[in-house]
Length: 473
Length: 82
Image (cartoon, rainbow over the protein chains, first blue to last red):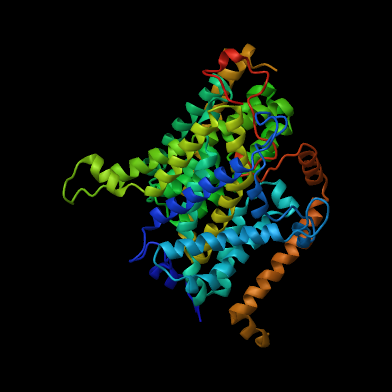
């Protein structure tokens, strides 16, 4: 008999972190770190002969043998079967099946470390991997893909649909390790957050990203809490981060850092993707109509549109140089996620979640006790890979190959599985009160308006005036 | 009408109906939308420039963003490895 959404929400379903096993955060850190180390080691072992420092020869880093073990469904137009063919039209199901295998493998390992049962996990884990693949398949349809409706949206939709329409069979519940998949994915994701990227556009890029982004993040959060009086602080923070930093990836990292509920994270992601599509279509003609300098327009796009892919799409539609500036400004913002997630986690542990009625300890001690450990894993992976990336041109290509060829795809599968679990465990009626007040939408719109004004001002100052001569193509 | 009532109450039947509707939209409606002028032009431009608008993070882009060659070196705070 299928379990109701209410039952699943009440009882929880995770085998990770139960008695006898490791804490869920620690299991996520161990498995995530293991995947990053595996990626670096195998990529190093398979390093190319010849000029290892040549970016012309290796534009996305050294090729890694692990890339063949984790594929994604390809783009398709009218037949989903086309998603399982390679570039030359041959059937290529194995890489996608292996990608699903990583979901099952990580989930199984998580269940074991958490003291759960492999036999209980596996049947549900197999169905979860299939639903994850279905979500990727929906996201790979050409119109959906080229309008930036990313896989988290479809993963949530698939989960919500199955959970609320069909119901979840009891044997699936041991596999619903949503938080564990997200946390493990975040630790793996840390390898892609390279601090050395922050300097890619020198001072103008740094000023556009580092001055405006924190101002908008903090202003939007405070406005939501104090002016709009949105009762959930985590919702305000998740919305502020996904709008001011870089969309879904920032929402996942900060949402996890401030322990946002799954409904809140779902809402933040839905809003972000909806407005991203509108801005991706509307900003290029607006820039043309305003007669903005192309470089200023590119920086404006990069600093305001949430999603990385949409930034590049909007920038490229105005020209190659514009796309280059837009992508680089967005990449600088991308690189801020680690520090922002750490700051949010520290603020929550030390201030928001403090227990004023409990025994008084030192502020640092109390903060440390509540600090989410997986954020340390995320930050650790980021710092180690940033340090390796900064050693020299060959090492930079080593890290880029390991991340673009393997870790980025694995964490994609893990995030996607996590969102399917969230959808399966969410009662669609719980989303209604969040939307009914309309306040989260107002917060997003006002925050984005502030972001648009401040970023345009800063982009005009840096790219249009102060450093004009130094950054002109 | 009453003959359909048990079907509407059955979770499996409702799920099958939802799946059929999804298949209809994804395999019928969206390919038709793709033929529309502005959509077709947008997709063609993105394909021609090898842009993946669905990338969630820069590492998922077809081409990694690099420091543009035309940025003057005077603006770099310390040497970049790439």
